[in-house]
Amino acid sequence: MGCQGAAPVARHALVPSVTAMTDPLLVHRPRFPILERTTYLISNSLGAMPSAARDSLASYADAWASRGVRAWAEGWWTLPGDVGNVVARLIGAGDDEVSMQLNVTGAAATFLSALPAEPGRDTIVATDMNFPSLLYMWRAQARNGLRVVEVPTRDGVRIEVEDVIAAIDERTKLVVVDHVLFRSSFIQDAKAIARAAHAKGALVLLDAFQSVGVVPVDVKELEVDALVGGALKWLCGGPGACFLWVRPELARTLEPALTGWMAHPNPFAFDIGPMKYRKDAFRFMSGTPNIPGLMAARPGIELVADIGSAAIREKSMRQTARLVELARERGMRLTCPEKPEERAGTVAIDVEDGKAACQELLRREIIVDYRPKAGIRVSPHFYTKDDELERCVSELDEIVRTRAHEKHLGKLPRYG
Image (tube, rainbow, N blue to C red; front, side):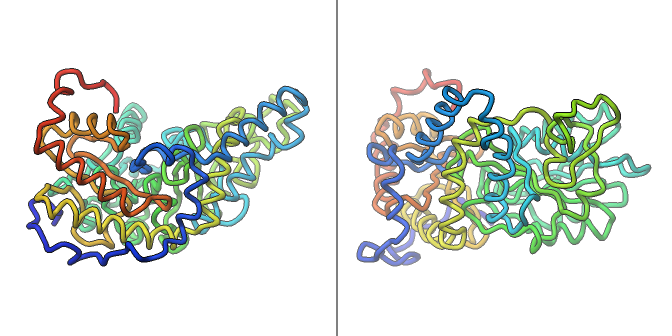
């Protein structure tokens, strides 16, 4: 069951006071300029920018301005592999196993394009809680003879693992698992699904966009065949730096149809003969990589990798539990898993006129967002202070009680 309608509990009954505790992860807080002037609680949507990203982008501009085309041979050409190897540290992969991609939709499409046609296997299993961008792409494959089976949620919070497993059969080609559901922050049992899929001869693609950087991920332990994710959110890397990992034994057998010259073992030969593929992760790349996006992303990815997902997860579990407690004290409705171990880094609070209330929080420099069927999403990260959680929920309570958000009704922004 989710947290909907949970009864108030005594203050601090669930989470001990941490006011006197030392939080070693806050040593990294000065690295993020936006934290000086806002209460930033939306890292599941866009992680705060580290100041080092500005420096990295400046070095990109300097190299372009001073070195020109020579910059390709002085670091740009190998950058996708260099950044991919940092990502590999966060997902339990090896060197040269991760390719950097422009976005997750493109990464997933590249993987799908590499899967050979198999008579009798024409089904992709997904859920109606998956992020819509990939659902749009999967459904579009009907023109290629594939069908999509979407497993429905029972409560709007979670997907029951037995429901996913029941949808897998001998027709299943690919099972697509969102490791963490973007609306509710529910963590799916990817390993159980992978084992069931493999027993039926199907492959598993894990979308880890909402987990890498806040929930420990190990592709070998989870037994998945491929993983997509990105630096935009918990990795504090900004847009344009996503990634694809494919199980090495499988990768060697695949030849993506969505490809380009970066995947060729000798791209500067400009050979117009039959396509050949590199033996490393570059075989899943296509055209010219997004160098500024990778330069911007690298500092955040490196910092998260250095801190380690285990330490971040420990703090995240404590702070999300505190958010749940604070909301329950005020009788607020939550759309999240009840068990802490099933909940990732976000707590969604569903109040009346939530989108307008979100706009009022933003006006007060409390940075959160709103999603339909979820509510106001609050996502602390390793750089979050405990008192910022108190401020967010307290101000939201005051906004709802006094109807301070009514001025935003009727003039809500189209986006966000």
